Amino acid sequence: NDDVNTVELQARTLSYLVRVMPRLASNPRDLFLAVQLPILQKLKLGAFNNCGLAVRSSADVETEFRSLLSLDFGEQCKSSMHSGEKRKCAFISNDNDTAAPNNESNSNTIHLLEAAHLARNGAVRAQHGAVIYIPTEKNNNNGESTEAQVIGRGWNHDFILDRSKTNKNKIVLHSEVHAVADAIRHHGEDKCFDELFPRATIMIVELESDYGYDTCHPCPKCDPLLRAVGITNVLHTTPRGTIEELDLSPANANMLCNIFVSMPLSAACQEQKIRCKRLERAEGCPNVPSPR
View 1: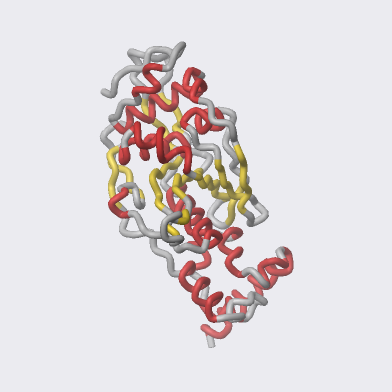
View 2: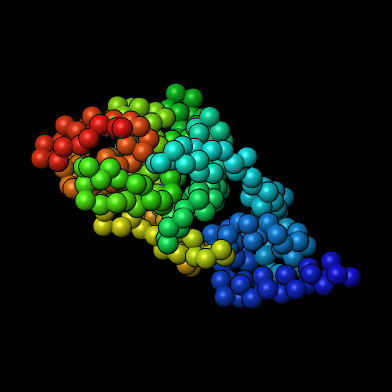
């Protein structure tokens, strides 16, 4: 009886959400864009079938919904951070990359859920996560589609600066610059700038407490950063449970000379213990210290 009552209560709660967001009734996948995955995973399966969601409208819809609901971003791994501290994270190593399905909408949802998972690592006020990926592409030779490939991951966090070189104690590395540095570390600077970044999409997520999402288009510092490295296609969450797309074209490598671009990118490269030759060579940029 307790289980029956629980399912009824959860179904009633979900039905209120469906009334507020009517599109959920015919697009149950969009529920994952409105409510954070850990909460949905705590609900009984029966609640989704009795709240007005068309989960069982077809076998494909039900399979897709169940696969999203059962997503597990793997065992937490440890990544060395700025002060030698070990910070728990998911999928920080590209060795753990998982293939996204060829369905573009489903793929975007999975990248959003992973970015949200990364955002929970953040210990700063705004919990942002970002995933840089190469979207599904068709092979011109055989017409087959390639699977989406994640190349960089990041989240908002503090980085302790070298006081001998700056008057600041720390800087908040935003998820976008963290993901850019992560991509460079895993794939190399030349491959990223010449091949991957121009084809890439970045998914940016901001968590609203532990239940929903907020709007998180690139800030005035991250906008020129993404243009500078050549990533112009941006997707981000909204409180309406939608994914919005931004086109930052044209890319502009000269923006590497902007202090608001060079400073956080330099710090992110120091944290990853890598060098960015393009940043160091950028005309007019301040001297960029080598990784410690």
